[in-house]
Image (cartoon, rainbow, N blue to C red; front, top):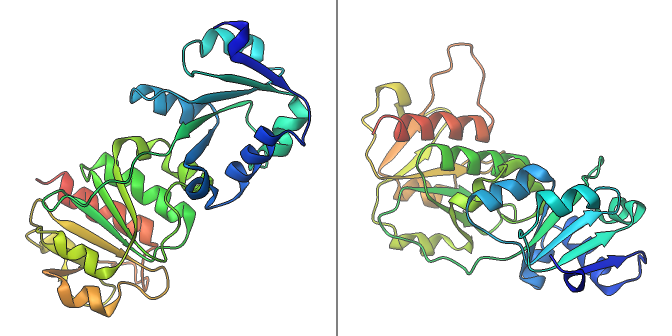
Length: 257
């Protein structure tokens, strides 16, 4: 890298720093800026492994000597922040020492026949990120989020997704009627009704619907379902966390195809 591509910043009032702080700490800032913030070595390496290149790579001053070797060529522009400034910008309790800014991918269109996970107002960022990981692991390449679901590219969802974002087509802000384009069977999860998962003949490809943490799948989506599925719980619990249920259901579909 050339010295002209590297900028050192020490002021918290710098315009770039202000924008980066919003990107790191504001759940939906990525929508306004058209960029996403990946903080930490794991997320950044996951992006590089998928062939992505950062528009800007940001490093703490103390990490910069190592970064020049480890991340040469990873971005078109490099920013070095004073350690205290990087910590101020970070959205983490224990700030990392580096991160990437990536251009937000162009919105994808729903593919009618793709194996799909539908998020029906799943609101917890950790749950959403975990579901994305399961979707990627078990061959579901498309995730469709109904309005009211957690912002898919928010910092917390990105951290929980652990790099799964870069293997998926993500579509968010959908209305129920937008799902009409899907031509694969719709499978909804239920705590108390439907076929038991371990006995059901699961179609492939399909679209699994994962519902709101408290209310479950909306009645309107249940009415459209080809199958209602429940998970046997011999231990007697009333219900499973939605991310745990998703992992079980998606594995049953993807691994068994």
